[in-house]
Image: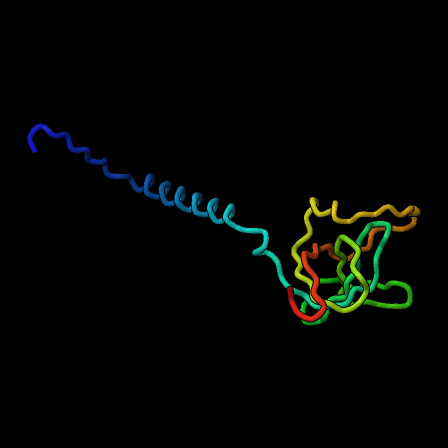
Length: 139
């Protein structure tokens, strides 16, 4: 081709090649981070709703031992080995729950209009957020 200008890239130095690889890795990590959907972080548990804490607006679930995600807690005369709390009021009894990690934005799900004395401290058990409940199978 007469008179045509052909662009020839300059060869990259070893340092530039390393930087280019780091840039690709960084872009990949950003893409993975922002492509995650909240529903991907859910899982199903089975257990029994054993109490409702009206001062905080949280239900207490004794999770079946096949998934150890809770902590031991004593409530009245009962000791629960694998208890968690979820915002909202659920009917006592056995069930299956689709849950995810608790976020601060989930606090609005725990509606409480109860008058609470200062001696009632929050329970020292893990918080999760229950998204669905079903009495016979995982939702």
